Image (cartoon, rainbow, N blue to C red; front, side, top):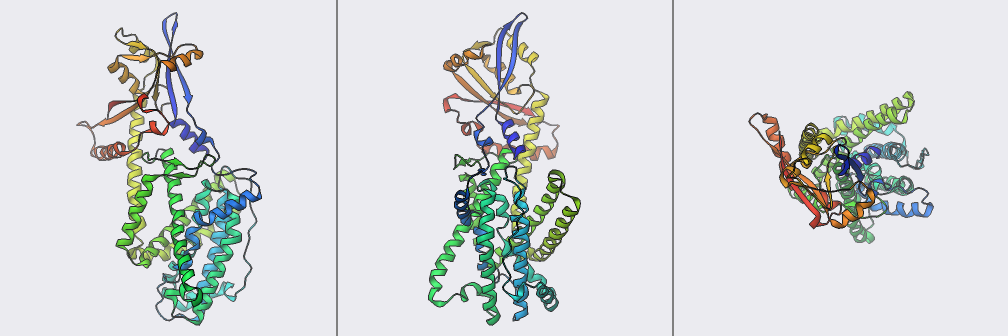
Length: 516
């Protein structure tokens, strides 16, 4: 978060040019005033010393937002498995054993007890690992060995379905901006984990007695007297589960915008205390379109489940690699423990990845297609922004150049304040020179800071550069394509001035061509 805060501060810096008399004529100072960065500097969802009741309330709130996708996984885990034949008791015991140890090792050990430590605003080290006590003989890992020995390649294919039992576990780590670490741990360890273990145990017990009901294993083991109430609750729970996807998407997009890796979109902060609680109407509509399109194109829940499985397994593998780097570089964990962690989880998740990759032709390609579109947008935006910054750094205006511009008799000094927004730390944006040349004027800021109030009363103007790239004859084909794509994104993204609360009459956009 420290790097993100620094990036946000850099993006909100304002360069103010001051003019005061000196023996040599004019003396110019560049004053840098940070804007209101309350939202950036605020805690990212972690309230220290919140107390047990606050944590319990937060833990209750996580049940829908964070764990929505995880607690609805019993609806589709068994139905998503392509059983090649009538399963036996040992098959079901083996599958349940796989799910139990997956939930325990990845859910409890990796995410609840290790991944949640990778947070800049944590409250200390949490090392207590809670295991739900064993109650079934299937908890013995030897049933996993029997399962693969009896089913061979078919068992490997079915392994891709068991990964769905851990869907949503990444939300434990991704939604730290919305909830405190302790609240997520409490909810998972004492509510979600034991509930899932018992639910899968109940499903497995029913399927052992009714081996051919695996395509509808959740609803068929429910007593007929409570079937419809459970059906309604399960349907509503599936709707609530979408909140985990939505909230995580908002958080990721917001951080991408802050780091200048994504075009600006409207971000509404829904909490005055937690910087991570955000809402983006544009992203919400895009998600709606994607969801409807996926349902219409892939109506079969099995194809959607395959896509989900590919995403979950790959994200878990990437998280394992990144956490390994955090352990080595930041935490300075002993190499023996790092090696133990990496070998255990990389091997385990690598096996899952190899299993779900067999599902690529059957819906598993969907997340790759969406990722390619998002990667293209992010790369195009980042490339264009970097070229823009390079141009500004090359053509930035120093104080000597500014003095020459203002020494022109035709340039008038008018009362009031004029803010020029720029990412440049040392020097002034080329937009300033372009403004002076064309407007033939520049607002005063007097030598004494005490006179700022008087200047403010005279009028304040916020200048935003509307820079576009000029594609010359010598521009390469790659630059032509990428910069044209960047211009399309830039023309459709939101301006930064409304987000900063600048009144409409005080906004001024100055257009300028940057040569590519």
